[in-house]
Length: 259
Image 1 (cartoon, rainbow, N blue to C red):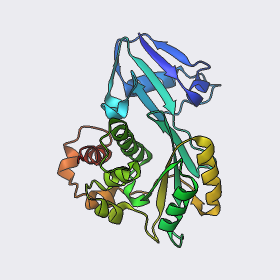
Image 2: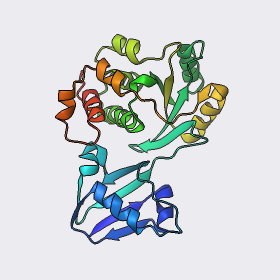
Image 3: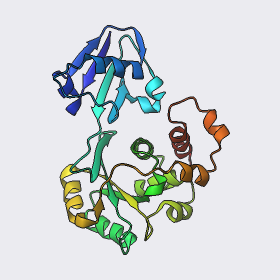
Image 4: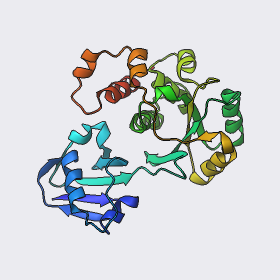
């Protein structure tokens, strides 16, 4: 038997926060399809595109993604990724931390100065900005942030600040200056703010940003740029046996960085 724990909005589709599946072995994708078929017609749809799936507490994206095997005795937690407000922010949790993504438009006169002022005003919030073109998808951003959070807890950050560690991992570079030059905020470029902290403080920060906040989703199509930027060939992609080979390669390059 497989135990399913439904958190947040996921349980609305089933009127329960816990289900049992009488199966011995199935993949995550098969399990999600099975759950979709359980939803009755008069219930809210079960959104499989905006969820995190954890197997015995381990995010399936850190395993084999949707191909991860789920077996008898496993506990599967399904956690919705919440899109806050009018999709001007994206909110989720990683390693028991609140993460909020905010998109800033291209017309900011000095995005670096804005970043510095936010850090001074909200010292309890971890704040970092990246150029949007370095974000392949929400899942890509979430996985890179998770690598930095795990490194922070393990004491293996690439620098003395998690903000810099995230920047270096998005740039796949051990050189801080190179990471800032490539991925750091620049005038005239669309950008994403990564906010980590307590939600009341983050909400106040987002409110203070006011009109400079732009719709967060959908993510732009950055596939070709990222392939060229990181010199990723079709041969490399063809060797990755997953549904998101480019994402997996980018995350792998972020993860293998060491002092």
